[in-house]
Image 1 (cartoon, rainbow, N blue to C red):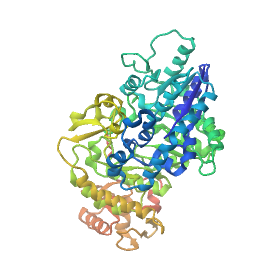
Image 2 (image 1 turned 120 degrees about the vertical axis):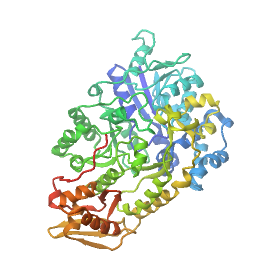
Image 3 (image 1 turned 45 degrees about the horizontal axis):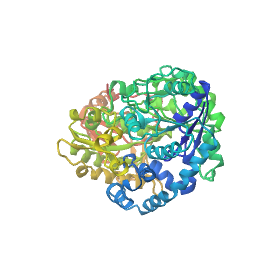
Image 4 (image 1 turned 90 degrees about the vertical axis):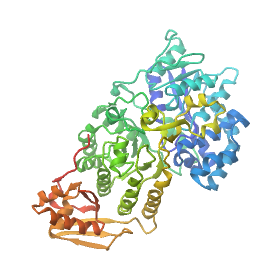
Length: 620
């Protein structure tokens, strides 16, 4: 059988679709022919790179902008008008962004011709099966295209899969939209090739775990997940790079690679972060061997002549720090790697990662409040988050992160304290955004809402403006939800100072004159600190004697008692020296704990080999 995977809007055009690349390779291994057509690149060429990518990557996904744009091609006048959608859904979140609102209106007028062109291209490739992968806001685009295909005299088989089809979401999709023939729920590496075999007559009819057929009354059995990651084929991204090379957008940006080295989350398997819904039913952590990971990354980079490579894993397998990254460094590959990590990494680990090519990480910082971090089960402290950011700034690793707020049970004072702290961090990477808790399906906040004081959980408001379905149906279809706090609190009322501080932080970072600095250079006689932050008490500080010794020891979180022991000085003298550093805004303090804030550009000799006398206790 010949399988075609249309990659539809609003998938990010900056990279290939990981799941599609894998399924192509897996279908071929099973003896079928397969290819992808990146139709998202075509729409971006029609409407412009900037408006497309703003919709695809810049706006909160729970606003469902991409879904609403295609919904009219499904439901006609049964969905909200542009005026209603903009007024009720977008204005409260995006403000008066007239440029994007005008672009949205224009895009809707282009979609009928665009979809007809998509149908024509799909038919020209003569597929037996068309596989739609829907993630975030791709469902309506998939549905609109699938409906047109099934209206043809001799239609192909239509199969849906992807994150938007997991669990009861997939069950509701196939019940609500009869032009879907089959849905693959959960990991489809095993189930999809089996479905192809069944459709081609090479397998007897019968149920396949994870596959739901049109007309089935019950939800599918859970799909069989991959247990041996090394047995997966290398993903096939040839169709993405060839499509991009032929597009009018080819000269405007360079696509980057993606790769996968693990699935699930080893931290989530022990302590599920309460707001995270990323893993669904597949939390169990599985990873590729270091040798396999090395072979795959380097093969992809050579094949596509790419140096920018992003990992799609939810969390870094820590064994790679001493295996994969040293091997990449030794082999001399000059890659720019991205990984999601846990924030309590040590400096020596970050050094090994940087040597192996890691230039950007997403550590899931979320907050600088210990109480908030404990509330959401992050397994780290606020000071660990800050010291990670300092070390990354020292090593040239970009930190991508967000401030989150609005968690049930949080205290307003935590945000007042964060607002006071943030101006001292202006020399570090600012958050990408500062937003409220988004209630996602599969998160503990969703599955155990009552336990966390969450009341009146309902589909996010935007769903009612996109799908003409009842509340019960939308509750099964939705991934994003709105809710009320049982306490009746209004987080917006106490988060505003943090939001204002973050805005100032971002403005300072991206100012034409360059971002602020707080750099420390240690020498034999002390340390010199340069400070250009807005809160600087002086442009230059010179520390000697005990002050310099303490500052070096505060490279990682220290306690007053620990510092007194390490320096052999009485606690009152240590306290007095720390008070001077605090008044100069060169450190952060929380009770008995203290952390240096400057980036160590020239390290003291005693710290060159990661010698922290009084490290912060590990968080279990």
